[in-house]
Amino acid sequence: MVRLGINVMLMRDVTDSFHNGKTPPNINHFRGTDLIVEWYEKYWCLTITSDQVLGGAPFRFKDDKPN
Image (cartoon, rainbow, N blue to C red):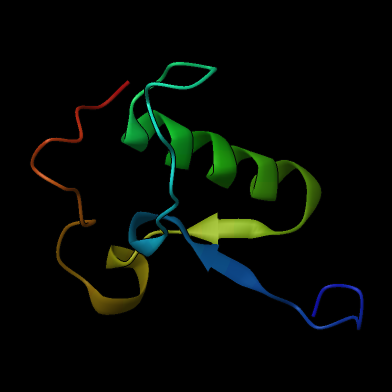
């Protein structure tokens, strides 16, 4: 969509990825997702959180500790 000139945004707190923490770079699942989101922010599009659209607080899994 970006290549087609369409303005897009990634909602970072509802984005998920698959990462096996037992393989390099040996980080937990949540940090793996953070790295994916950072890559999108750097190369593709801006990001927002769900509270900016829905109100309330951004979503966070209970096991996802802030960096």
